[in-house]
Length: 479
Image 1 (tube, rainbow, N blue to C red):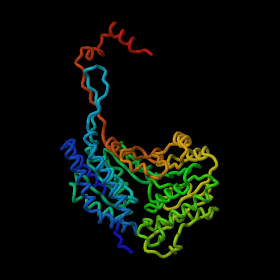
Image 2 (cartoon, helix red, strand yellow):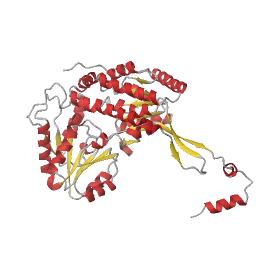
Image 3 (cartoon, helix red, strand yellow):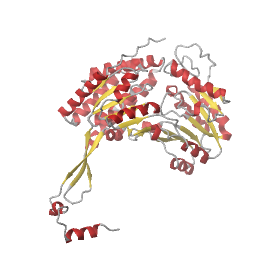
Image 4 (spheres, rainbow, N blue to C red):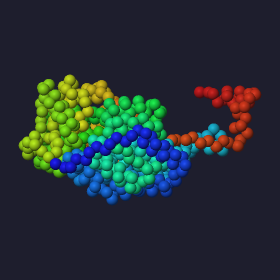
């Protein structure tokens, strides 16, 4: 068993408030940073990730009990570096004022993007570095400072992050505060100029209430039950393989993981068979396989097992995908075999709660209209995944559903396109970031108007109003 890093003591609320005050004072004193300063800060985050990638992977493996080096480098380092490099490459373009139409021909109407000031980042445990540091691409590109509160569920990663950030940045640029739920609660109550929270919908209600006291603008990146639709024209084996690839990635502990899958009723058994084969091809054995991530801790393992047990007790067929027929009762971590839930019913918890693990309910359907209705009866998901070669049906599904994002004929791929917005809608989130959308989210679009020198511009609104004004209004207010 790996050495367990203890959770850091809670950071005192007054200490965090004072730190925020120093960051705000430094921001006001120095003013909006130039492009060279912004790029330097972005470069320092990139260097931090690249130079310490092995230590980051080791901390992540300690926190999860087992997580492959390759998975951590891909999901927590590569993704961050890509976001930061994209922002750096496009920053000069994003900073250009936007020109808009003005009332008079020699007037100038433009939008200038200002940094908001200090952005709070409250990040989760499932991708400790990606979801804490990737937002810095937009935050730093926009010219802001940042305070980060990483999750206490992954204490080794949080401790290392605090150390690395402190070594690369002055605390008035970027700072990391550590602690448990009490620190998180106090953090959300600080008067940030913007706050981004990534986590569960239930906690988001509390975050939003706390932010409301300071009228702090929010970006909420939540989760939800992202559905998969397998159309009748889809390649069933390909769809099953792609779904299980993402469902088993990080052991399903991904906000964008496929939560449940709708399959034509005549294809359920075939889909299940393809899913079992796909997992066996990726993971011939699971129990001590370094490529297969452990559930992060015993509490979450028990929670996910509870969903399976509840479904079994209520009549579902449970298909545990265990290629080597291993006994998981004794192991060095908290690995859990991928599990299909067949014949699920709505009263089962697995269809009511976000799963966040390697468990996949398979729901049969007869008509695509029924699937659309069932999706629309639930809170709007973070993602929707659709497999089909039927373009008319694809248009029908996309036109009649709402989700944060969509990937067609794969799962989660839309998030790899850095230029696309990443965000939810309704219960799955508020606002979006990535690429230019992150720059915009963390900027204030300031309207700047240079008035015309024409005489009409000055006298247009000044009384007394006479025939000229009445003639102008009569001509202007028309169909």
